[in-house]
Amino acid sequence: MPNLVVADVTKNYPTRAEPLHVLRGCSLELSAGENAVILGPSGSGKSTLLYCIGTLDRPTSGRIALDGVDPFGLKEPELAKFRNERLGFVFQDHHLLPQCSVLENVLVPTLAEAKPTTAAVDRAKQLLDRVGLASRLEHRPAELSGGERQRVAIARALIHRPALLLADEPTGNLDRTTANQIGDLLLELQQTEQTMLLVVTHSLDLAARFSRRVELDDGKLISQ
Ligand code: ADP
Ligand code: MG
Image (cartoon, rainbow, N blue to C red):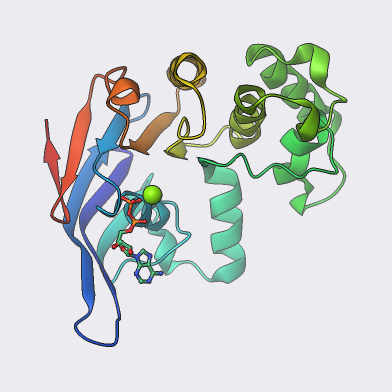
């Protein structure tokens, strides 16, 4: 049984004229420990699909289930908890809090309940060690390079051991060498953490690192 099921997802955006049919029936399945990349040109609907899978947006129709749970059947506090604990996000822009240290940024998802526990702090430090930033715990994001900031964002996304890690153009703001390093790091951590990883990108360089490639074409997913 696949752990992530995306079945016939559509998304329309209303416009003044005809609604825009961005997703026209997207289906995809992933099992625990698997990764896939979704390729497509700018404007093809990659972010829209990733946001629907990540529960940041709602599909117009279709079904999404993670480990048997339909997140859109949950009420708001449960949905927020689901999103925070079961999903990890890495965006093109790191979205780090500038006033917080590297360590504090990684702990942000654990602050929903109370003060971070010793276990959470240990996990954050361990992740920052794994992404090569053990000596930068007290630095602010402004004191890091673009690649280092993305490493912090990846550590933050993994703090709760998510079932599914989602990344939207995670290397889009980086030079080629750094982009390749971040692509490799994402895949390496996906393997060691045994999470599912779904990346969307228009970068063929990044996509080449994945064993499973799917293309978003005219609102549908086509296996390559
Ligand atoms: P990609 O990530 O592949 O570049 P997007 O998912 O961002 O593509 O956008 C796909 C299409 O949907 C684009 O034509 C975009 O203009 C349109 N779109 C995205 N978000 C909205 C929105 N909130 N309202 C209306 N149209 C949107
Ligand atoms: Mg996009």
